[in-house]
Length: 444
Image (cartoon, rainbow, N blue to C red):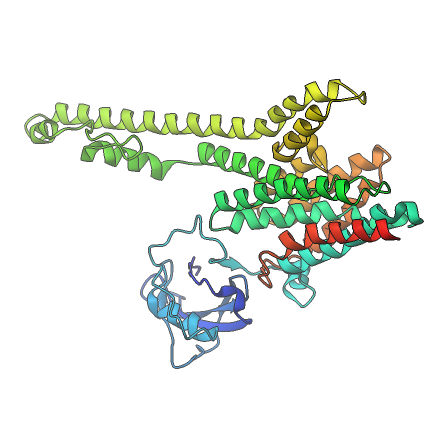
């Protein structure tokens, strides 16, 4: 017996791990000869979601006097929601009835199948890493890398640079998780774009004011992450265009029959009142009306697919097209430029999310690859495999960036939990530590 249960809880991040045994009724009446008996399913509540641990024959756990009985295959009711709320200790706010809530589009609010196998047990143990843990690992390695960057002329050893090779990959992985789970992808992209522009301005101001020649400031991971969100938005368009659209087609057909088109906003359907009125009198007319409605619904679906495909192509091409704007400036080479042209170039590089300006250039393409693999079975294994392929390419090219392959260790240990919710920590820490190290290196 298996259920898909959706639970909405905005305070899931603060939950401690809790185990709840929920009694489950069989899908059909139980008889002595059927071999089917009522049992229980065990759910483990973590900070990131609720994991289905499978069937158990143990007695149901009474949590704060609440138990719930759910028929197999049916959505949960408010009673089960109260049970989960009580089990998590979050008794101040009762979760709503989510029996009509679809699975798609709900972030951090769904029941997942618990990791199985040897590696799955490691991920679900204390060795498992949350999103916050992976981000902090990246932050520590990034600081070490930037110490080498700022103090290289002061004798900082070159091997410090090795610590920074997995950093971008870890941040790319965290960005994929963040974009997948954010409540507003538009706000997420706007926030990254604003940080990209502000970071570019900070780089210029620091170099003009401090005037330290020991390091060239081109640091702007926000540009890479924003370009990555553009690519991920393109993937969303492609997925919307090519996924199975049975429900959408039915919706379009229903709208046509009812007298309106849900997508185009048309007030007139293919089957009008006259057709409905005459359906009983003439069966062939009714059949023709239904066929017209079906063709109309199919055309609406095809139009939607074409639109989404074109949007995806445009979004994916955008960072490359914006790189063309820079070509006239690059063609001038290192020759003398007027002050006006210098400032035009500075403004352009600040606001232009061109992949040519990305700190990690074409490696940013790892972001849409990992995003496209996010829903695959054993997704972290597939994502780690993509990282390994890119690392091998760098190894054959003789570049130390092949050490990015070590990023797969924390990624494979990712347990699906969010961890601490310091939402704006990285947005503040990244420019702050760049400025601090740059100024400190200029004073040494």
